[in-house]
Figure 1 (cartoon, rainbow, N blue to C red):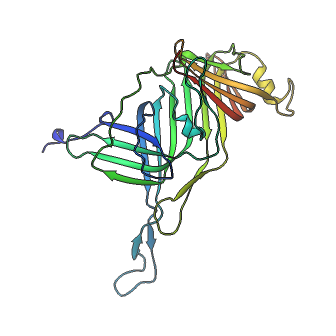
Figure 2: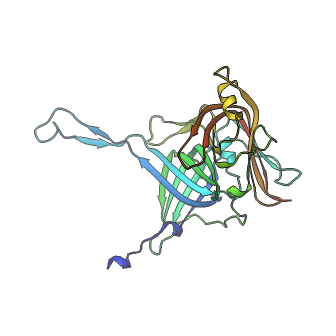
Figure 3: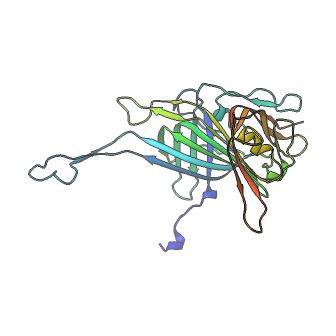
Length: 318
């Protein structure tokens, strides 16, 4: 068979689904799309143990004598353009409330009980199909990026506790009919309800859950998962406009003093009259501040915020 006759597949011949597990790695069949998925990059490691020792008459010494399996570890990155934000329930570890309407928008609030998911990556090939199934998945971090002239993108860093392979594919599901969010509908409020007059070049939200797997005797794979401290980081790049942010960073208008806190900060994305998502942070501090200056270019400020808590609102219908 010549090279151009090989039954190769590309990323668009595959699909990725997730589903919330009831218990850790319980084999839940995934039925949900994250959004318009652009890439998935899983990496798994066996942590093989190589056994060395003093040599025998025909083996050992400088070369290993035996190899045995160590504990299984896995991670993956999923990048997509969001259409809806249902998956935030697993990031914030709490069920959303509301109905998604104008009078009763969805509300995503923080929880403390880990919500693991199962993920399937299905390769729909012309010959032998392959489904890689990942269980006990923890969304360890979530980064939401908005850059002028581009769609909103999400990158999820996920830990998976186990992995299986199957030649029978999980049933694919319809993609959402909702349009993806873009930078055009973005606004930044500091504090909440006070829209900034600055020209915003980019904004980025990172939510970190600091997950960890627990292992026990009798199994290669993880038996449980936990999350530890939660962290919110917001980064923006804006055209230099006034002294507001540098004063809050320094803590005064002249010199470094006690940090200044903003009660709230909101980053909102709107798509039409009846669709938005609104990230509202509370107890916000500026941790890093810098002004870039290059000849023949507009001066910009790079600002990094940290926040104590987050509530997200979402409207999907009138």
